[in-house]
Amino acid sequence: MKLSKFNTFINYKNKFISYNAISNEFMLLEPVLYDLLETTKNSVTGLKEVHPDFYQALIKNQFIVESNLDEVKQVKDYSHLVDSNESHYLLIINPTMNCNFKCWYCYESHESSSKMTIQTIESVKKLITKIVSDERIKSFSLSWFGGEPLLYFKDVIKPISEYTLELCEKHNVLLNSDYTTNGYLINEETANFFKRYKTRQIQITLDGNREKHNTIRYISKTKGSYDVIIKNVSLLCDKGLSVRLRINYTEETLKGIRDIIDDLKIFTKKQREFLQIAFHQVWQDDSNLTEETNLIIKEFRDKGFFVTTHDNPDNVRSSCYADRVNHSTINYNGEVFKCTARDFNSKNKEGDLTEEGNIIWNEKHNIRMDSKFKNSPCLDCNILPICNGGCTQHAIDNENKDYCIYKFDKEKINQVVLNKFLQTIDS
Image 1 (cartoon, rainbow, N blue to C red):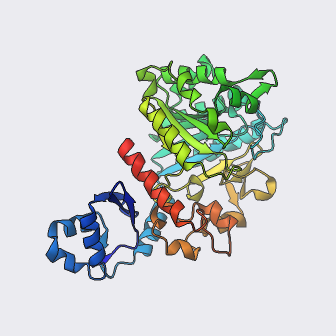
Image 2: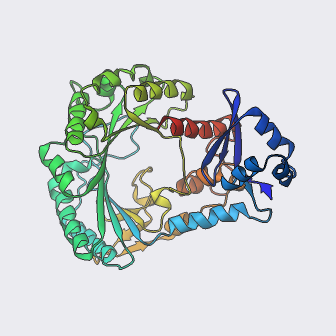
Image 3: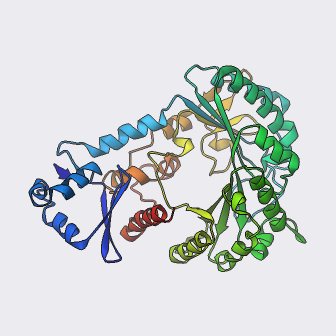
């Protein structure tokens, strides 16, 4: 027997947080037990004689594993199993690249004339038919992205959603939908539609408090969007629709973010059951805001809100959609992509949707799907089973060089484990 290479131990309030990344299990150890484990780490079977109950608990939670176990292969095999799952398909559709907001940090090129044509809509329907009629498919997710997808709610979203629901019911395939929207165009009609067409979640973003948000997300220089968005989130929650309220922040906007708590006081206990709050640091801001953010998250939780954090990865068990075989993103013009966190420039496309509803993948797609587990530092890292070097996009961006998404900073890596632990005990 041997200690797992995926163990992490962190001193915490005079005890030791012990985490195994492959079992995803925590143990909170008294110092005497940690010292005992340290003493016997070169021959863990000796621990069996000294403290058999502790020894068995470590085996149960995979802190101790068989001597001949190839743990990296174990992670690779599980990753392949997850990414090649044939029973589910996720289709993301961009009805347009246009948007009614112009946020400064947005990576997308807002094309005012972009709109999915009737011909492309028909090709999308043919693709969905091929997917849903495959007897291996048990569930199908339809995700709306953009641009602002609700700009073409009636022209694109409605006809494809209506067609998909009818098809899924015919083939006994479980359907769910979700939307990434700025939330401004939501009204009673769209909310009722979401309810009818199996919507699992609507993600809507705030950029700081009312004052800060209205300088970033606005219709015009004199017309902000904050109050309309809060009202629309309330409407959705009131109808029992799950909303993920993403709060983007920078060092500047973080200062007044506690004001949002007061603005959400109008939400009843029942409405809050459908509201999830997620904090995301704007990627262009590399300030270290962990300590301040954790304090703010605690305040939101203390007021009865369910909060998740971005830095709580689980990139093998719950890998990015772009890593998975059964996923594609169809742009308004029929070009096909995998990652939605990069711009939809034609030079980045990974395939094309044909008129017959087939996807013709190109070499960029092949490179992506063979990019995992090529980074040597990741294979030696104790959080490989939850981090895995990020996603396939990180791997592609760092091709042929050693990299770490935490910049090889042990404190940052331990902070990931600590955040995961704190979220576990707070949830």
